[in-house]
Amino acid sequence: MIKVENVYYSYPNGFEALKGVSLEIHKGEFVTIMGENGAGKTTLVKLFNGLLKPSKGVVTVDGIRTVDASVATLARKVGFVFQNPDHQLFCETVKEEVAFALRNMGFQKDVIEKRVEWALNLLDIAKYREASPFTLSGGERKRVALASVLAFDPDYLILDEPTIGQDYSQKERLRHLVLQLNQQGKTIIIVTHDVEFVAECKPRIILMSKGKILAQGPAKEVLPKADILSRASLLMPQITQLFQMLSDLGLPGNVLDEYEAWEVLKGLGGIRLA
Amino acid sequence: MLRMLDGFRFRRGDSVIHRLDPRIKGLYAIVMMVAAMLYSEFYAMVFLALLPIPLVFLARVRKEWLRSLKGSAFFASFIFLINLITGYLYAGLVLTSETIFYSLSMTLRFIILMESFSLFFLTTIPDDLSLAIEKIGIPHDFCFAFTSAIRFVPDLALEIQSIMDAQKSRGLELEKGSFMERVRNYIPILVPMLIRSFQRSLELAEAMESRAYGAQKKRTSLYELKMTRSDYIALGLILLFLFTIVSLRFFIPPS
Image (cartoon, rainbow over all chains, first blue to last red):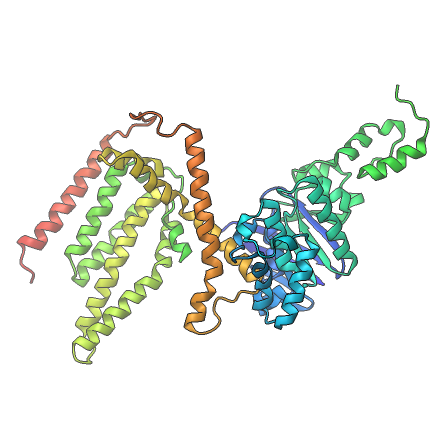
């Protein structure tokens, strides 16, 4: 469990990014953190693997206070995939890149090989095994970065803006992968602005604005609330907007995606729009 | 270290000092540098080191300015120690008060340079700086390269931070191992940094070309630098100061 207790964080230049945040993320949960630019989302998740230490308050990961542990030890538990893959790729081949973290963490050679192959296949980049990461497209580089973290099998997986620069079918793949990993018991924490992506994943949502938590709860409860979302500079999913506009026809206002909409509309059978 | 660079970044502000012509402020920084080079007496150095303080208050950049000084504390103590040790060895393994004062003066010399250039960069708009060096007669391409280099320093610092975070999250430990291993630990930081720098230069070049950079041989400027009354007063004061320190040095024999 990741536990955040009344945490404040100020950057060295004096900017106070977090102003009293408390939350709990249980093992096996799927959580997304949403909010406007500068709301403190990335700052918050950087506290989870110890990259930042709270200025005030306590963050614990499985009972270990992050101030007492190094990033290297926390990283094994809490995998963090950054937004821009170009900030981490540096090896000559994709294979080396995926093996980098495993080497740092002192895995045995045969284990490393197995893990690397597993991660490459999982993200469908095994064919680029011997290619240089710099020759790949933006979306492929993002998957290499993800593979390089998944390879060491962390209990918690943090993804910072994973859908940026991905086409629709890659987003779909990512969604399936994330849900699959979550089903296998991994705790998933995603930082994103992508409302439609979140609507289809239906995780628990933590909504942030100006360094504080505005609201948290299941997607079904948070996403249909236009007023709270707008305070975090977000819009409702389009389907939800449409259904709320049609509420006088007796349509429910908390429909999040096409499948739910289809279920509802199918049940109505013979409605006629005047 | 990266925080020291922060003390050289322009902050929007409005004060007598901000409004001064960048050429005057540049001249001030250079005259302070000359003064720091001309003198090595301890009391003279203390005086020179205290001199910028009222200007910093006038410019209202006390916090940022102090940060640049704090950031340079490491180099300053390094300079002090080196001077102290060489002085100690040179004097035949005795620590004289002369050595201590000399080492302090050398450290102050560095601090004076930091103080004056930090004040200059903190209060001068990068575009004005470019205009100023262009006015001196340096070709625009060089001025542009120079100002964009300064402009990108804070971006680069942020980027290095992100790269370090990403690699640390993959279990990289920078402070582990023997000296050679530690050097090798920096490869995962340096490679992405270099590649990103090239990417950024390319992006910048494309952005400039799409805005027709270099289409016209003769450039005109939207803003012109103009000397005002306060600029002439400042110029007078700086020249008077320069005259005083030079004559004190060369025409009055040291006591």
